[in-house]
Length: 100
Picture 1: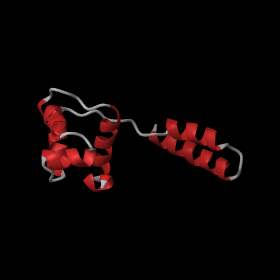
Picture 2: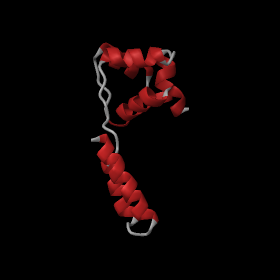
Picture 3: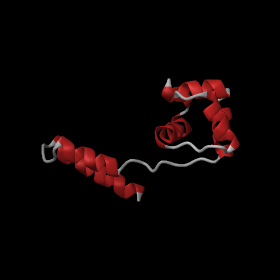
């Protein structure tokens, strides 16, 4: 499925550059090609944080949330969602430096 999305995006990009697609249509196509946002368990969040060699306070600062939220995620009291979940996906793929 990923290959199909890549081909679709490349084709649309070519059409956009040639003037065959509007910016609005291009954005709609790009939104369809976004990678799926992965959800994380408490253990996976802690592993992601420790893999990036960050304390809970430092990890929270990078994500722009409170350290108590990290603590609740890592104990399973709460689950990340929305923008926080997207940021965790970015950290997993590109490292904490991507948020600096």
